[in-house]
Length: 193
Image (cartoon, rainbow, N blue to C red; front, side, top):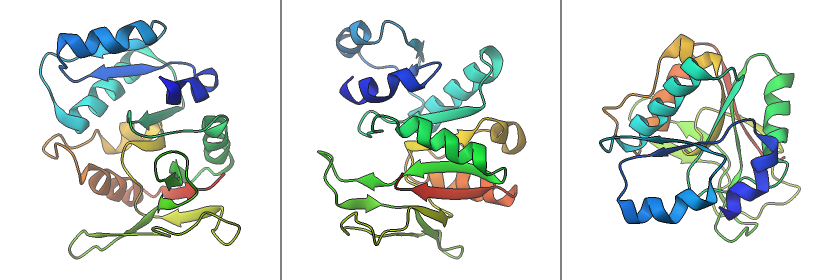
């Protein structure tokens, strides 16, 4: 809830995908998200299944230009959503953007500022790992990897490349989807804005 409060005024819709959680957990979060659209899945479908449920709901019910994925342990600061949408608006070829990920408690130590995918073994090298966020770190960085669970896509992308691969339950899903985004000709960025 505290993370959501920082950016809630910058979004049109807030969807929560409940991946078949227990009733006790539902009782904990539902009172805080009375204005949110809550999709309750009958079976747990993993991260990718949850993402796909949200994308399908959006495609069938909402008219939006962007889809922001934020997992419960990620943070988007106030005005962060606005800055991400401005970046996507300004660059027609940009398809996906993510904020630099810092370690918990809003530290200034970088957990990841995008990265690069080794096309041979699909391992990832993260940029600026464990470095201090300061003026030496590029504000905009074109990359081919972003940390899953904290990125914004142009919604048109899913019409072109399809949904997340649900055979990848979690961990690695972002490598697959971002390779498909790049293969469609879109660029991928990480930003400190």
